[in-house]
Image 1: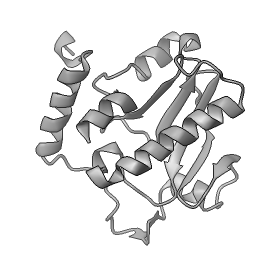
Image 2: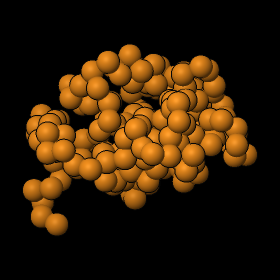
Image 3: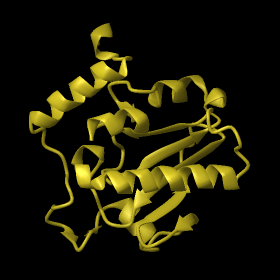
Image 4: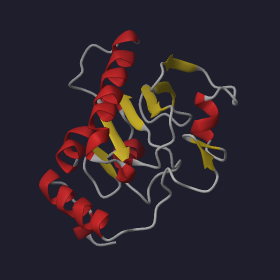
Length: 173
């Protein structure tokens, strides 16, 4: 891979994302054949929020659920997911902006509930397709970002080709 792939500037990343979105890249969206009424039967996150899998859900309401990442990239690493199956961040439309904002609010509240007081030392974002391990929208909430290891700093590199922060994504919506 060339260095050109590793975009650092948010503006350049957003332009790249807009181009990718307009190219019509095939992605699994919420209208797949296996899904009924916001539930994807093969999706592990759908199974978790429907309590079909034994996972400790630490936050739960009518729209969102939050649980720990099974491969934490920081001392505190949570995933905030919508109850209704949405393919990934590329599937989001402008009318999803309130959902994304609520995901951020829940993520920050979970961090504060777990003793994280410095909200300037956190990382909030989404993996950009095709770099999603699970094709169900999920917000990564990591803290403290300053304690992330070398590999995690690469996987969750802000506004890279594979991970986009919420603040940069807002400008994309």
